[in-house]
Length: 319
Image (cartoon, rainbow, N blue to C red; front, top):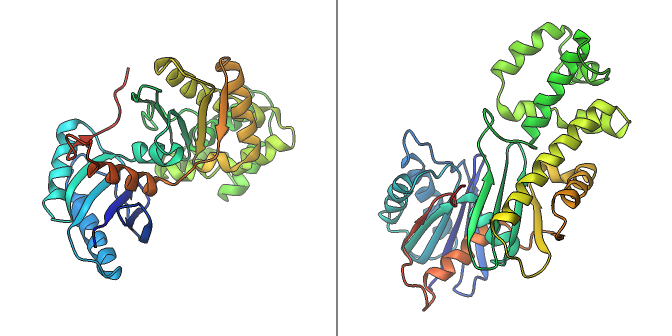
């Protein structure tokens, strides 16, 4: 039986899905993180091959698949991307192999290949877009040191800054400090800097629920932090709308990531987009998940009109 393989390799886990040539899913399984480490780009290939091999065996299929598309977090420049793609192809997992960034498969799945914007806000933030003419671009995604505006990390950090400013008398009064101290199980505010300096990015982002709670209780500082984050995300979407024009109708926008599980935040981002995207937009639920998007791209590799199926596409171009 001929089949397809889709891989969604993120910073937390990797999902492998198998499907027939009509993209009807056969089986999916999860493994460890599939992010590409620029210090050793091919290190993730052994893990991917092992997970693919186990999934194929469990489904009662035999290698190779007709086509495989892997969307991996951390895919960098074209040379690095091709190195990883070739290493994955050399495992013999599929006749045709394409490697793309994880954002492309998320965009493909969320919009089923149609034009639109995918606005991602979880621990970090980034936006991807596809224009009516097929052009793909991204906005943001610069990481915690120089980017990630509107993300859970940015909100958590802003909450710590605002709480300490208030404690100093340099900022507006807020109930953030006692709430954050209680969540962190810290009694001395002077230990906050050392805590923040040693914890992972996700632990800063984990402070978001306290910010949301206080915003819901009319703490103006907490609400302002969320509004600023929403405005930052709206600017991501607006930038891509401008760069990918013309649009034939109101721009479809899909919200993706943990921040959008909070109804208040969804409302704030939608309101901010109304201000920054006067030409109109339509918020949609994701049509499919990222690994299904990878299967869609894998299917295209064996389509008759495909001229160069074995390709590598890292992050879409930046301006």
